[in-house]
Length: 525
Image 1 (tube, rainbow, N blue to C red):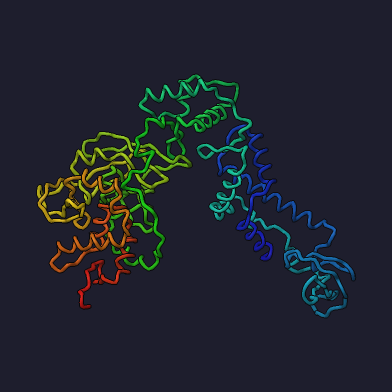
Image 2 (image 1 turned 180 degrees about the horizontal axis):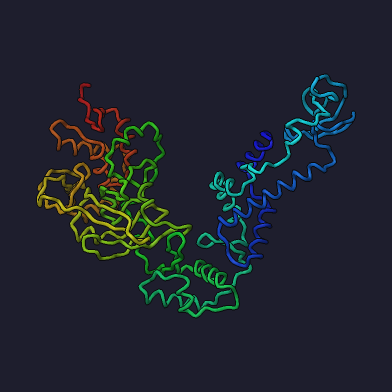
């Protein structure tokens, strides 16, 4: 029994989708005549494999080689399969009487295998656990469809998705699959009408069902199949983008999407540096909980009340975006396949609405540029987001500052394009993170540095030390907090917290003081 379970469990853990499995799925889709989800196909495949294994077990009992059961009698020269040895085949060499008061007719057989020394087995014993080793118990979890799906769903789904994707005749839209050759042809005229309808609706989004009604798409076929066929025709046409969240298919005109949705803003572009993150984890954990960065695997955590407070970095402030970090990703709508998802921001202060976009591939949320400007937010302002009452709606707000004027780090640009930081009194409208806050009086001058890649051309460690030297002038002890440096570097180039720490901890001219504080070593040290 245990040997059988162990073999079957390994079977699910190492399952690969074969040609016969694809044939089974193809025939299932033909039989149902409608697109089916990956979940339905996977459960059907698991059930199909379970039945196959049961049939194989039954066939083994009638194979040309006898199955070894202790209850049976054998003869010299018999070839036997041993279930307890993963069905290895051995030949009976000798047979002799055995002695055991509990088993009067006990026989002992000596069996030779292809490798190793001969082994001894008992025979002619009617009561023995191995007599039932091929029996499938009712409570065997490895033959239970629901338990197999629950325990192995992630691996099996990935395995199935990969195999189905590699099959040219199977197409997937919004999580559902169907043979391409059996889809209904959609005329170009219907697609042109769809473009005109979406253009009149400011680009969309509009659901497939409503588009079908408005273009008067009809056919003598199942409605789901017709809708799937229309979805595929729209997907294959570059004029249209599917922008709906998981479980909902919505279409938008690509030409009317914001540029910063189709193309990553310059402030968010980052050339990845491969560093060892493991030694940095203990330091990253010391960053304040409102620091979120989409470039980090490490992440802060949101409050239990489903509300997250985000300290704006300069790149996101200037781009009108939010980072889609691991925590924030759970807050915003997502999709099965769509690279971009359109949703609605609700300005909680005045209860008005404006569009937002989740750009999944590049991990940012777009749509806040005007809101930042209207409310005079600055880099370092604390923005509050939480889920709305309706799926696809995100509430956004900020808490007003109690003081109109505050001493805040202010970035100035010299004639030589060098960055200078000064503590100046500034008008402040929202609560802010003191270490992250930086007022930018002349964003256009900074834009020139970004567009000409002035700071991106030099090694990051040089930029880090340059910015640290400027920030250290603002502190009587010459100390700089890693979080301040992270905010300062991101004024001129995109950089995640881990990379800031990596260069600080590795710099020979910098001393770590604890609690994320650093300072330059004295020259005589």
